[in-house]
Image 1 (spheres, helix red, strand yellow):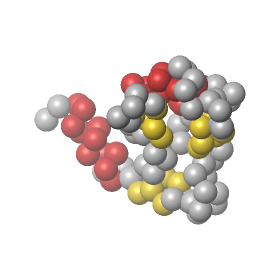
Image 2: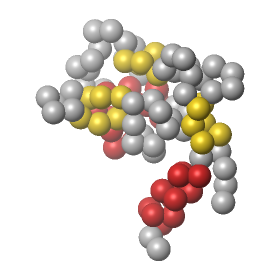
Image 3: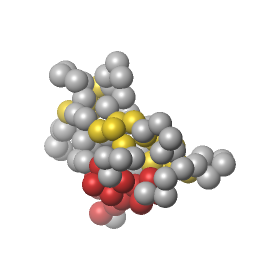
Image 4: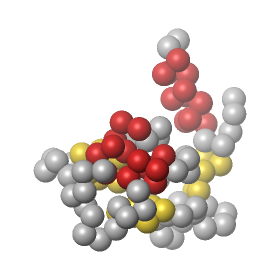
Length: 94
């Protein structure tokens, strides 16, 4: 079994409980900022992708709350906060 497959299986054990509001948002007017593209290969949960029109799309469900996207994109591009209490990722190690 490859290391990538083992990692994916272990991440699959984690539980994510979404909050009422997304805890990460692209700031209005920053949707086309080139810094968003940096998050695509670096987000360990794979939450950033390009849509059919080449824009960066963000899905927060499954976020590992590591803050990588905040570091690579910057706070000028993203609004980033930890999820509200009782929501977010629950790590389970197997």
